Image (tube, rainbow, N blue to C red; front, top):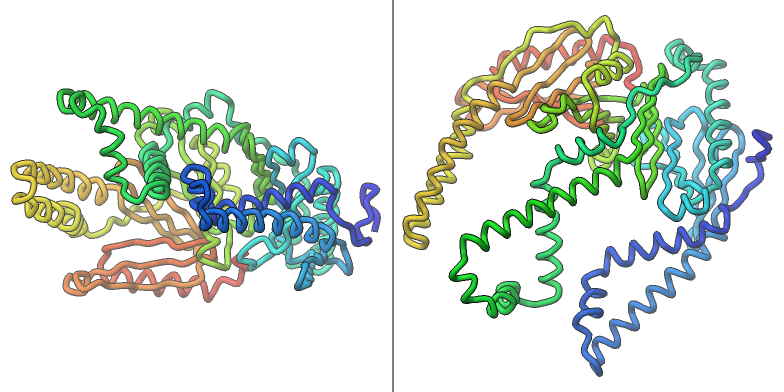
Length: 502
């Protein structure tokens, strides 16, 4: 089997640089599992402590184990092609063989970290239909060899489909159109994406890391903070307001910079190509990723925005692919920030039949949802806050400010929560401060469920959940009769539609 001067029929190992890459992967796994112990050894190690010495020996033992494991893993790893399938043999103590026929392969994706880029190698992940994760993962292949392997497999798969595939598969396989560059995040767009990120989430990550680290260093966080601030006690007492404002500004600036840097590292030089077969996404600075998205495997397309991103007329496009496990479903969702409306329209027209993309009437949920939000996010928290009056005094009355906020949340949620449906598609619209729209094709739905809480049963209301291989779509607080009609309609369309769902 010759393809681009590569004979893939012969079992072969990865290039020798794979030993270092495997070692780093083992090292990262060890550090991730044992970082609190390592941190306490570095910062709080006591000279002459027998217990600390034992822990240090254990860490050294793990390091030696990782080194030997990476070398043995390298020498026991082979891949090759046989009988129109890619085969992977691996295992140190327990040998395993993975065999994936070409017709089951959905995508072949590449990724590169700094070490990969330095040695011009790529990590290869081969994803098959129905797998809950990449069934074949190769830590390092020379880039030209990886491209040749991908081209060979996809060419052979195309030939098999032309010989024995369905008419729909043959039509997609026969696509000769070159990929069009749909989106390219330039430096200006990348800055806008970073500026409009969720900085509150970044703030939460920073606080979680700081307090977790402090907790591992010292047994009592409050005592630690008191000791650190004790020397400034007179200053803090006299300048409480200034210190509070300065702290808020500092944390906000750090969170903003964290979001900005994270966006640049993750989405640097992001490019999205579009063809009749699907999409190809390339992104990243330190970790370069190349992801192929098969058109048939796309289950949901969603687009969302927030107030800052709305000023830039930008959206975050999310493409959810089929996944056989709920845990892996989140990983199979690909985010493309910095998208504009015309680009989203092109993606939607590629995935879904254009004749079904008309302007459908919006169906709104019950206005009783506003009372539900006011109760759980306004009245109950306010009552609990007021109950602390005997502890904090008049400051407890500040909790009453939650009430008008809950009125705003309820009104905004009700105004934006709706759905649209026709013979082919179902679309969910939601949001409070921002907006989110989710679109899926009915024939790809795998299950429908009508749920009722105790309150909904009293009011003859229900929530309908639509499940696909990439996640679920929910429509809450509609009338029970409407939910049952929707359930019957969707089940009828699933049973009468003979198209494959992926």
